[in-house]
Image (cartoon, rainbow over all chains, first blue to last red; front, side):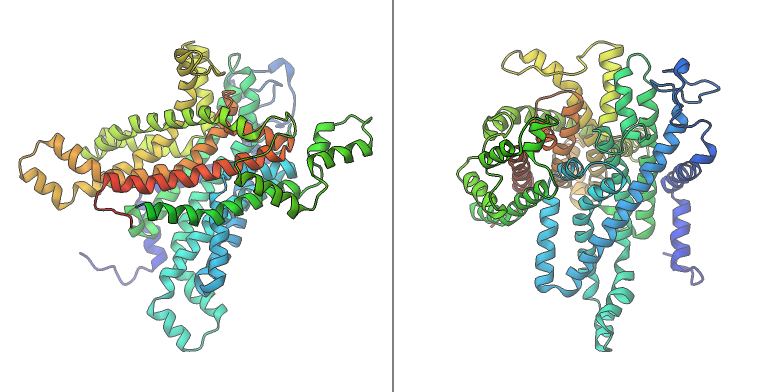
Length: 287
Length: 316
């Protein structure tokens, strides 16, 4: 047993163990590449993702079209870049909304206990018992597709889990001596929640965020695959896979390329999430 | 034990009621209803005729009255009739549930057949080639969308090799062999993905169990390694696996919605999807409540399974 060196701060320690962790390193690299590709899509896409090129339809990879073309001759590489951009924005905002709403409610439930906890925990039970995909599908079928509704449909599913995780984290923290001390010193509820409890309860929430991010990308892909996402011709990875289905035996590229893009994105987040979990809280690793 | 089961079932009632209310409100929260989607774009249907149809379906009543009527009927086992086909929802559910159940059970079987040997071997040969492969398999299982795996399987086994049909369904009672042939690819699509999650959890719980004192004792007694691994270690390592399967059951049903769509299987998931698209209120309400109840029951079953695997766990 070597005592932790007194010069390293907590963030530095976390960073060190992240870099030493192989899956975090691979996952981080994939995520970085995907993020860059999505952010810079308008700059690096070699073709207009919506441009038809009938003579070159359903072609495989070539020097002009690196990953081939779809049934209208549209460049798959360019479409995948824009699809990833869309996918990531939906995922990021859904997770953020789910975290803000569910996390806040969970904090309140865990901090105030009593009837607040009772009402909110019941709400979480209902949301979690609701078949998640049906909830999202019903939302989109009734409200229509599009960016905002996709985000709404996915974040509604996230409120329940975030509420539970935040509540559980707060419950373990609130019995600590330093919380009692803060209260004895007359700190306000708001100060207690944001300055004392939240920082100490954040590790499980951060892990939950990375897990949910991967899940959000998968959910967006599934909903788009069912035709409930954004309207064509705009490229979404899930709907590209679905459109390519009809031409599977002629040219499988139309489905395989966007499918692999989804796998790569989710894989990156999952690997990064695993590494982050190990680095943030070694105790969580056991389960 | 019986008291525990009753307690759990009673505790689930408010949750299921909440699910029912949420569905009910969600379906009515937006403009348009089944009458508008039935009538569609036909312009020659008079507003009077549409009002008459609404009255016929009871859609002109206040919301709480509609909900009360529906709930009253459900408590007597009557889920109402489809507004589109006029068939009883419970009748359709009874027809379609076996398809989804078969898909779910075959997927579960696939998952266990793959994950148990892989997870156990990975834990025994920790750090070896199998362990590495198991980790790769597990993380891929968590990262590949079910519908994409389904397409890859169709591409390989149906289009390229021609071994299995790419889609469609044959009832088991009609032709058992054909039924199984049609269910293999759907079950693989769901099962291999579940296998990823199960492999991962089994590996880590095996590792934990193998480091326990009673394993050392068992080895010291001179028991064969096979008995130690399967009788002593695996049995104890299965508890978290059962938990994961219980939790995953919900997502298995969710995955079934999409897989049934991809393979054109007439299951509960596709029934719900059709109902949602047509705003067939009784169909959606009935299916969602049915699925949520099934999930509650499976979780209860899982908790009861614990005491079967580990007799130390008892429910009072």
